[in-house]
Length: 341
Image 1 (cartoon, helix red, strand yellow):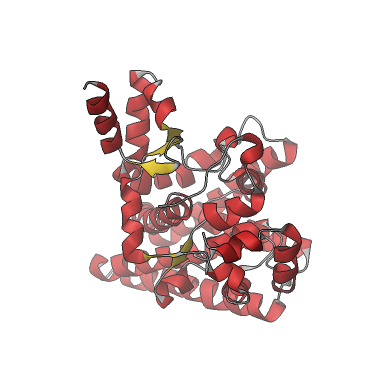
Image 2 (cartoon, helix red, strand yellow):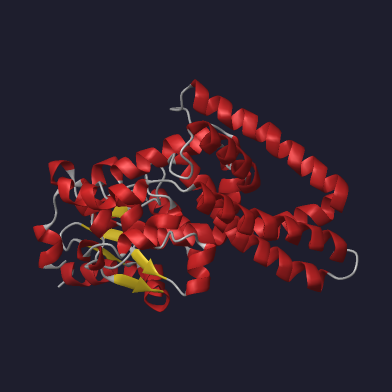
């Protein structure tokens, strides 16, 4: 990281910079909802019209609808942070509605996600709202069964296809044992709302047709969403620390990636590629993230990750505390060879 970042690594400095970008904009929020929820509703109508004609027409529309669900989730996400609108009540209302569309309980998710923000990059506080990540030493000391489960969980097919479907269709239907009453009840109310939506759409489309369309939409949205979350915290040069060595500002600017995507993908992902800015201040709505990033050289010292370069993240499996870097399983084989010399 450059000297510019190190010299400005002070809470007062970045708080002053981001303050004006934390202001919610009602016109921008409403326009984003219109250009997101509107096309999404239109796609469902078109799929209804085309489903009796040909599935070759429906499938591409379902894939595109999955892209819009990613954008809907960003709106849901910002409402959870209280950043999308000025009004807390409006944030909560829109958060609930978008939660139904994304199969995610609003208050319960918000609680877990806030834990993620408070502990991102902290090795001693892993386990809530993040991707399961072991250190090299932890992996070596694990049982054979745990190592197998870990390898399975980190397999790309499981991580980006099976896991998202499990997460949104099954896991989110049950509250965490650590959740308080409001978070638990939010899961139950969301389940009822989702059941109503599912029954309604199944009556319109037919059960089999609806379930297949919803499966495609959720698989696309979930896979893309998990990939975005993965690459935002699993990249070359990422920051992880323990105990008092952990620092919030460092964790935001070094532990969260600046994922520079092509413009169309940036639009569908709601600017979440500016994840270093988001972790610096979750009060900045997605429609202000890019402007904030460009506002000061402090943020531009963060090295961007391109779409092509991000593919290397597929190879990262474990955190090596000695080398302070993410490594793949090949690193374990190299260690074994060295130990047998």
